[in-house]
Length: 285
Image (cartoon, rainbow, N blue to C red; front, top):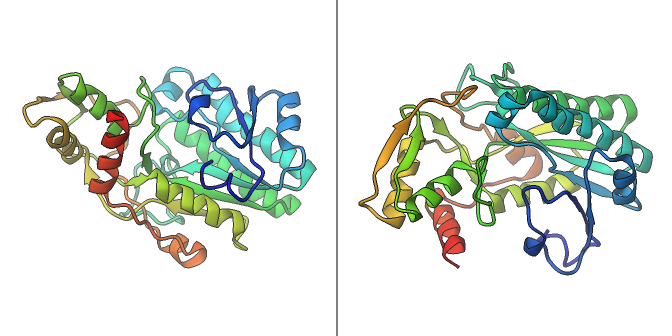
């Protein structure tokens, strides 16, 4: 929101099940409600040119535990958003996910690779991703799907489904241990929220509509390395312990961002060390 409010009229639709009103800038309008509610959607879409559709259940674990609820929010609600956008002729920038790829055939992962999601969440995001392309091809609706890899940064709330960096910091600051699921040799592409915001702004203006783009860094980090980095940042004496692997998890994930670079002029700028420090600074203050 901070990147939009200075030069745009901004309206936020949120049920605040995970976010907080206090984190929003003052100079925007807020509709509190459920994206699945048709009256709420209509009010949110009134006189809107661009929709950044970020509403989702973003947890693999939660999608495994409650696939029906997860599908209703991640697929059904997205289809409703696209229908509302078609009615008002608004561009939709959709938050897709690297989870659509499942276990990749090759690394780094290009947008064209075969997609075999290994969780309900991944399958839901793939369905919504396809709906975005279909609505462009069938109805001429301007859509752009951004396939986020592992997003992190300040303002990410502590909770059962928070990002792994936020979880590790919460565990470290409470005295540990930092718990790593599985061996810790799983690799991820951690992309800072500032880079994701920039990608969204670029997607809002691009002529390359009806397409999907990976949004990551193209740099790989193991979960064990991440845990060690957080430990060194907070307290080198904290223990790191390993637990059972997460159901539906994939071993490796790494973005090929060359298409986003060529088409959107997207270039990740935040190094992981800088990004982790930004999270730690926000937590301390």
